Amino acid sequence: MKAQALAIIIALASGLLLLIGTAEARATKTEYTGTQTCGATSPGEVTYPDGNIHIKGSTSTCNSVTTLPDGSSVAYTVGNANLDSTGSGPVWGTIRIETTGGAVLEGSYRGMITGGTSWIVNLVAQGLGDLNAKLFNTSECQTVSPGVSECDMRGTLLVP
Image (cartoon, rainbow, N blue to C red; front, side):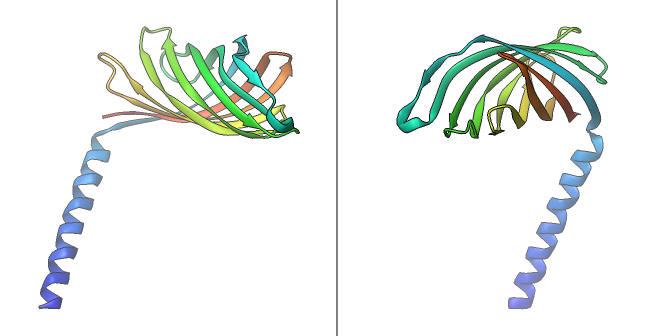
């Protein structure tokens, strides 16, 4: 009886894996790279509890150039951070991306700032309207002047 139950479980799992593999095979997967320059548009609410730095609702506008077919885009972010006294800690927020080709994606990001001047963030965004796509991105950023950062990006655009 146990062997029969195990055989059924293996058959179901194999069927599920086959369905997942078939769905992935039909999707168009585009790897890309790019650069991005971001400028702060509002610092948001900044508080200093116990010598730490808490940021809520900071906004920025980012201009990107990528190897994707639309080439460039503008992103609008609303971010938050809980940093220690050295400027290190987690960051998270939301993003809206508008491409030069008219596509719009919205999503969220999270990452980590180190020393207040460099950070890595990962984001996931979903296409809106006719764009049935998901964007997965990793950005490595550096502050280049007060309120301005530059990022190297890499990611995947997945269109089912």
